[in-house]
Amino acid sequence: MAEGLGVRWAGRRGGQGLRERAIESLIHLAGLSAIGLVLLIFIFLLREGIPTFKEVPLTALFSIRWYPIEAIYGLAPLVYGSLLVTAIALIIAVPLGMTTAIYLGEMAPDWLRDILKPTIEILAGIPSIVLGFLGWVALAPLIQRAGAPTGLTAFTGGLILAYMALPTIISIAEDAIDAVPKIYRDGALAIGATDWQTIHRVVLPAARSGLVTAVMLGIGRAVGETMAVLMVTGNAANIPLGTQMLFEPVRTMTATIASEMGEVARGSAHYHVLFTIAIVLFLITFTINSIAARIIGRGGGRGGQRG
Amino acid sequence: MTRQQTQRLASIAITTVSAIAVIPIMAVILFIVTQGAPALGWKFFTTPPSAGMTEGGILPALLGTVFLTLGTAVVSMPLAIGAAIYLAEYSAANRITAAVRLAIINLAGIPSIVYGLFGLGMFVLFLNLGTSIIAGSLTLGLMTLPVVISTAEEALLSVPAEFRVTSLSLGATKWQTIRHQVLPHALPGILTGVILGLSRAAGETAPILFTAAAFYLPDLPNSIDDPTMALPYHLYVISTQVPGMPLRIQYGTALTLLLLVLSLTLVASVIRSRVRRRREW
Image (cartoon, rainbow over all chains, first blue to last red; front, top):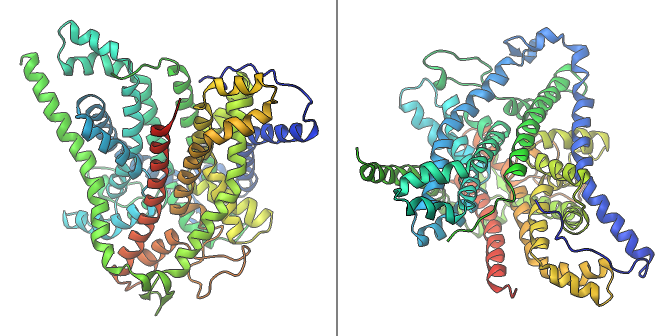
C-alpha cells in the first residue's frame, strides 16, 4: 500500500510554532496508539491469565473434561467445540461465498450487481445477537424436528455462523475478482476460451491471494463469534465423535467466557482460566490476521480496472 | 461433454448456488420484519418493561444503547481520526508504519468477547470504573477504532495531491494545509467511517456483557458511572433467560435492534455514494 500520497512536504517550519508542533505530536501519538493498544490488550490478558499456570497443573489444562464446579479445567472440549463449529461454518460458507463472488463479478447483469453488492455489504452489519435469536427460536426447532435429539447442536451453530460470515467473504472475494485486469479476460476470450474457461483458468488464479484473504478473515470471524454460538450450540462441554457428531451439542471457547465470566469471583482459579482462554483466542486470531495481512501486502499494487 | 456444454452447466450451477447464498440472508430480514412489526409502536418504544419483562416496552434498553453509542463516538472519534491523519499524511514508508498497519488489522480481528474481557480487566477493575456506561463506551470505542481508521484514511487519501501541493506552494504550513484543505474535503468520508463504526458498536453484546450491561433496571441511569440496560443484551436476556416470554416482544426487540443498526449502515453508505457522485475532481 502506498504511504501517504507521495507529496513532498516542504512547508515552512516553525512558522506557526508551538501550537502546530503540539497538534502534530498528538497526531503521531494517535497513530502509534494502535500498536500500544494491541500490546496493552495482550499484557492485560497475560496479567489476568498467567496465574492459571501456578494454580492449575499444565497437564490438567490438557485434560478432556471441563467441569469448573469441581475445579476441572480441561480446555480440550472447548477448543474442539470452536474448531468443529468453525469447520462446519467454513465448509458451508466458502463454496457459497466464492461462487456468489464469481456470479457477482463475472456473470450478474449490471443492474443486479448494483443492487446486490451494496445490499450484501449492509447485511454484513446484522448484529450477531439477532441471528443468534433467530437460530434459537426458528432454526433449532426445525433441526430438532428433522430428527436430532436436540436442536441446539454444532451444526446449528455452524450454519448460523456460515451465513454470518457470508457477506464478509462475498464482499472481499468479489473485490479480489474485480481487481483482476480486464485485459486478462479479453486475452483469454480472444483466443477462443468460453466464459467459464476464462473464469476457471485465468480470473480465479489471478485473484487467488484475495480469495485466500477472504477465507482467512472468514475463519477469524467464525472463531471469535460469541453470542450466536452461545445461544444455539447447546453449551455442553463434550467432544462428540462419530457419525452423529454434527448433531450433538458442543461448547466453544467464546461461549464459555461469555456464560461463565459473570459468575466467577475475581482472582479465583476459574477467573484466571477464563482469561487464559482469551489468550488462546487472541493468539489464534492474531496469527490468522497477520498471515492475511502478509498476503494482502504481497498482492497489493497489482490493481487493474474493470471494463 | 463439449466446452459449450460445460459453459452452460457452469453458469446454471453458479447462479443456483449464488441464490442459495443470498436468498436466505434476505429472507431472514423479511422474516424478522413480518414477525416483529406488530409489536412496534409508540408505546413499545416509550415504556419500560413490566410484569417481569413479559409486558411493556423497551425504553430503558433503547436509551441505554443510544447512550453507549454516543459514548463510543466520543471515545473513538478523536483517536481514530488522529490515527487516520497520521497514516495518510505523516507516515513514512518504514517499519513503524508497517507495524501500525499490522496492529490495526489485528485490532479488527480480535474477537469481541476478548475486548469484553479486556474492558473488564482494564476499565471495570483496574481503573475501578465499575460496571458503567463509561466502561462500556471505552470498551466499544476501542473495538470500533480499526473500522473508523481504515475508512477515514481512505477518505483522506482520496483528496487529490494537487490540493496539498497548491496550498503548500502558497506558503501554508503542513498542518494548515491538512486543516483547511484536506480535512474539509475528506469530511463526508470520515463521517461514513464513524457511522459505520457506531452501527457495529450499537449491535454488539459481548463487549458490554461484563462492562456496562444490566439485566433489568427499573430506572434510567443517572450518570455515566451507572450500569445500563442495552438493546442487544436485552434481546439475549428476554430470549434465553426469562421463561414464558411472549414471542411478540422478542421479535419486536430484534426488529428494533435490526432497524437501528441497518439504518445507521444505510446512512453511511448513502453519504458515501453521494460523495462519490458529487466529487468534482
